[in-house]
Length: 404
Image 1 (cartoon, helix red, strand yellow):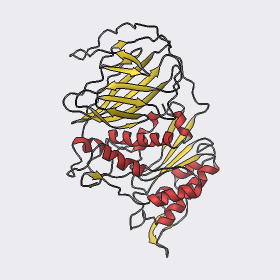
Image 2: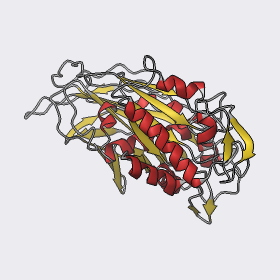
Image 3: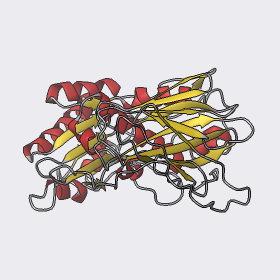
Image 4: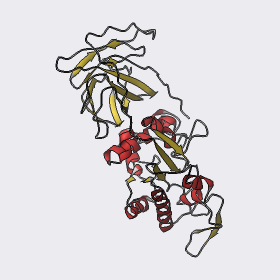
């Protein structure tokens, strides 16, 4: 496992916060009451790469759209972003809101993240502009101390508690080790990194379990080592696992308005029982789970299996099965499907994780993956979770209204 350095530097200001200590500067505009806080935090750093989270809190008038601009330091670049569209032109970086987070009420916050590359130093931005209002900042003292805040040059609007969605929602997760909560420092499934993307009105119940196919997850302990005439593993008795019966419980399980995310397909291709599942059986069992969730008023979302890192020269390539079956099950049952397989391959290419020499313990690949080609470090799992949340907004899935 590769350690990565976390620089926890919450940066606050009336319009901008930029330094490891927290230097504050604000400006005012004549045509509105612009005031905001920007928290720029480097969440991980490795070699010539880094990850950052940016939170913009609107302390002024409500915004119907937002654009944040800053200048990259020499040698810095942005390779991938989530919860915002980030474009660069030379040293200029521009982040714009997506459909689900473009409107920011007074007092509300919006968070996006990105990964980038750097050569030499990796300083925080020197200034931002938010919707055309420029706010300047200084640099932290060399000893890392906290400088005294610079007084605001214009009035600021007191923060207002943002309105919350009308009801609380529970997200239920069913899948394998690439989704599961960690048992140690590595692997870390993306499901364990999902909750921070949402407001406090959302809770996540992660019932993913490592090493499971959809059938062994559903019928834990009751899938035999014998195949029937159709080549499928015999289930006897056909009794559901406690994790699935718990989700189906009328009192404590899924209820109207909840969401169920289902991601299998990595272990299902095994030729041997008990994990083996054929294509038709796989699609059938997805339908069983989807219809059971629908019967309880929950909203299922199917997810294609996340890709491992596999290179063809300098390009990452697809490497999972059951993609067509997952899409077909979504169509047959009238539910959305997030193509995490395609999205993860595209991410690996944006991060330039190929070519590599098979060493998963160092560099950008080592910071993303455990010492294998399949499982994730926490930093990698967080980015995979970001792909899912980005898809929510892009595909118009209503759960996107609960994103931070």
